[in-house]
Image 1 (tube, helix red, strand yellow):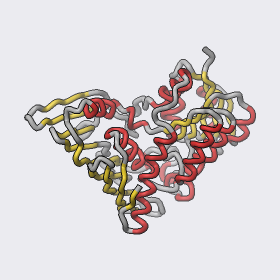
Image 2: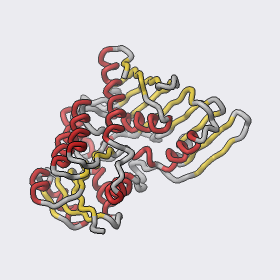
Image 3: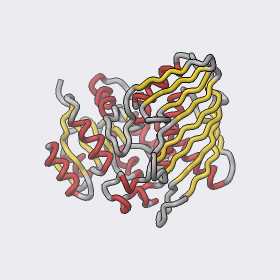
Image 4: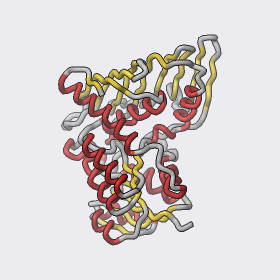
Length: 339
């Protein structure tokens, strides 16, 4: 089979640390081109991995013969770039949050549908080993119904992750649209929907800038959500976990409690009401400090090679985005928002 010809839009941290190396490691992929307005970044990637560098993604689309693109740019560019690539007949893997608004998300889904290409959103939390294991246990029914839960995602902020440090686009509202909620909160709204196989129907959000000075994006959010099943939980996103980041989830169920990634970050602990305790060490979750393969790239490539629509589809990405947008609406008007 001929290789999947891929271009990457945006050569910042997520592209350098996850997308590009994972494409390079996939035997079905040929990295063809890189685009970044800071052309030196694109050139550096091209020198390292082969392919051509462009400052302008539209120029790249015009000149290169491609099958797929990864969109790894500031949030405000996700929709226009995805739509342009889909209209060029290319499969698209877009970073989360997939879009800045519901309308944009819908337009992206429509562009992919109209051009008969796949749209996948980089919600890597679904693929982390502890999360995969947790879903398997929950789906087995041994714990019964989920009653209440908490899920949280926090680290010290993008200044420790982004190639631009404190000068990163993450802190500029016109480019980022949203802060910790768009960066981390949307991972959690996606993960909890996936894990519980349930939809969030109501959300109340307390969102603001608690500590990062000189930015107008949120650095902390705590939300209360109600699922369709009736389960209620909290969803927290933080850029001020300066010591000991968190990507933990706890579910209190009819027959016990499940703790995911709450101790070392790589385990699932099941404590049953009959007194048994089971610990499953299943492999680490990716953190900013410790890059383990995300699984997202391989899954995307596999979808293309086998012509299988992605599980983490545009529709899924949009449902998870709408939870976050609902939380902002709640923060703005002080009311519980029905989704």
